[in-house]
Amino acid sequence: MSTTIKTETFPAIDFKAFVRRDPENVLKGQFPAKVTAEGLQLSPPGQPPITVPPGADVKYLGENRISVAIPGSGRVVQLGVIRRFGYQNLLALDIVAFMGGDIGKLKHSDYSVPWALRLMALLPFAILAFMFWYGSTYKPEMVKKWGWETPAVAAGLCSLLALLCLFIMFMESTKAAVRAAACVCVTGLGFLLAGWFMEAITLPRWFDEKVDEQTGVLPIRPEFNWRQFDHEDFGFSIGLPAEPAGSSYKLSFPEGTEVEIKKHSFTSNENKTEYVYEYCDIPEALQGKLLSETAWFEANFRRDFPKIGRASCRERV
Image 1 (spheres, rainbow, N blue to C red):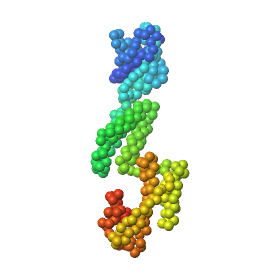
Image 2 (cartoon, one colour):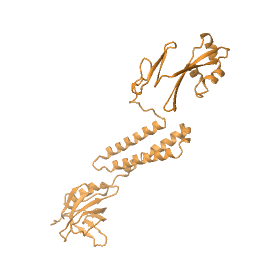
Image 3 (cartoon, one colour):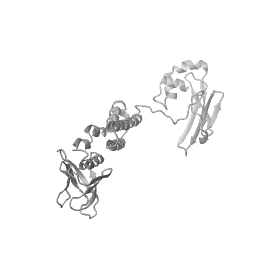
Image 4 (cartoon, one colour):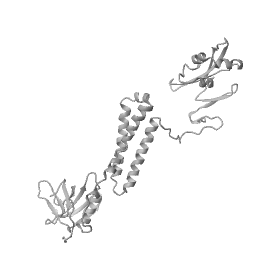
């Protein structure tokens, strides 16, 4: 049974109707539909258009689902309201309200996601631009080593973040400001990870063990069976997974003096990792002059560390 409903003229709002249930299977699949001031118009393929006037029995079933009484047939079909890039749940709810006379007209803009919000979903791709800009400006050597794998992975991750932002944009029950803020937060997280990867920022290391305040080094971790070896004659201690083998060799100083270098080493992980430390006692009378012998220091202390400056060489001795 239908009643006469007074409506206002408004531009047609197009959508797709998906048949969820028809008792007689007359309507099937998905087809064009629209709502106008004359009511709900269904255009199933191969059949005459169906017009359901305002006041007809139309009910809201939740989300984007409605039930519609087809005029003159006695059938009640269940339809899904599908509107790409729009608020289909809200449209289904308002169609029922309009057909029941609770609202006089529908406004097209109420069911479309604003372009400003749609563009928010593209924010994660700014991360790619940042990586290439920062890399080419400050880390050119890093960029040269990337190959195609790193940009491909970065583009994939940015695409996933963009899809997440797009999903957030269509959360109809959430306010637009909250959705925009959520997209900014998602993009911000991506920028943090990109900055860490590009070594532009240093993230806090919350899970690291605390450094010993007295020694300034990490504590020995007993679960790895590391042990501390003390060298009281030289006043230092060192931690290793096992006792190192000791050896020594002679190092000739520019003055013609030979000093014994004590060496301790240990190889683990099937000969893949080697722990080595060396130390010696330089006579105090020679220290000042030896430190001024730049060529000698470079030959004996910078051969393995070409980027270490002279000050670091002094610390090493």
